[in-house]
Figure 1 (tube, rainbow, N blue to C red):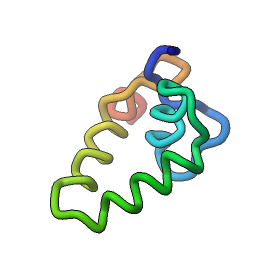
Figure 2: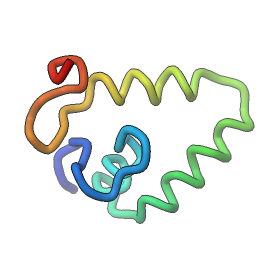
Figure 3: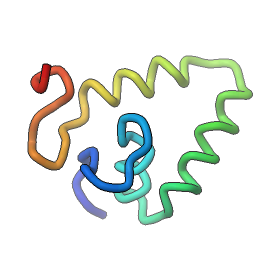
Figure 4: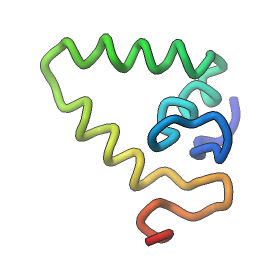
Amino acid sequence: MTALARPTNGRMIGGVCAALARRFGTSATTMRVIFLLSCLLPGPQFLLYIALWILLPGENGKTARQAW
């Protein structure tokens, strides 16, 4: 398993699904499909995605909040 960091390449919106896919050794497409299917269930999936987008560091070591 690799460190949890948003990649600079291969990301669509914020790189959260790509980072989770790298961490757990699966493809980014699989992780995106899992996320989209989880949105059909009740819960705070979008809030969690936004929180991870802000809190996860990028490959350069900065979080999204530090980049602003």
